[in-house]
Length: 304
Image (cartoon, rainbow, N blue to C red; front, side):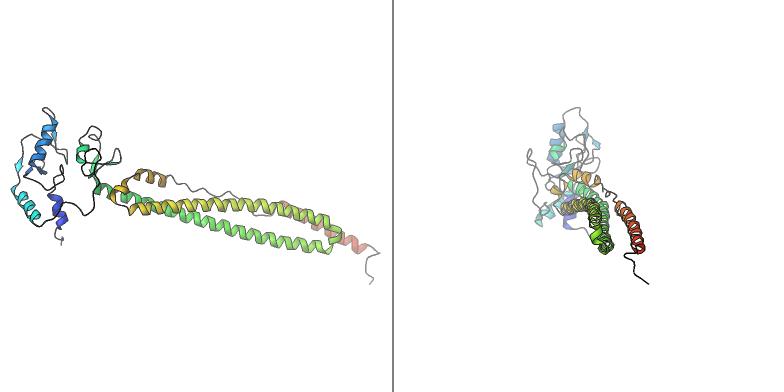
């Protein structure tokens, strides 16, 4: 069952879209829309002879003088006036700087708020113009629609950041284990192999530093992307809470920025120990040969 009309709904039906006040001596034109008699008469006079007349609301053509008095609507207006209901919505309206009329319309072509007089100007006459409430609803849906992909990209960025941080920890663990292994092997013959040990550790540290630098660079870039996405999401969420007029300012720019966000994949960084590990294997083989030589030396071998 439909809910009864509210006073606000009724007021919307008794406001003249030309003067934006209660209808005075309301008349109905051919398309069915209602206007103050004086307002529609002045509108027709401003058009001039020979110019086709179109409804200020729906643009349907009508003939000058085809005005039908709407007595029933006039009675409703009078009753509303007795109830002392004001035509405003409770929110202070912005006024057109040029015409000092309420900014009730939104021009899609220029992406700006305009008044009913601006709508008839040459600058906006050929553009699509809609009530600001309708425009706000449309762009709120678009803005909210932009949040979904942004949040998904943020999730991906955070996941990639976590993955790179985990790789960094694992890499440092590998380095720690390998350092202990190398130190253990060389400690057995530390005096004889000090120079070789220091060389190998130096190369290992160089590879560690280079790889860590690349991994941390990935983490930094991904963190920056995450921060930018969070900032853009917060900006859009805040914009959705703004009043209608402020919400529509630069709305296309905000949507464009959200669509143009591209998530950069981190640079592929190998965490395999290649160069240093090969040198270590060669050194280990050399150590084995050295042990054999030591064992076979009659001066150092233990007697049975």
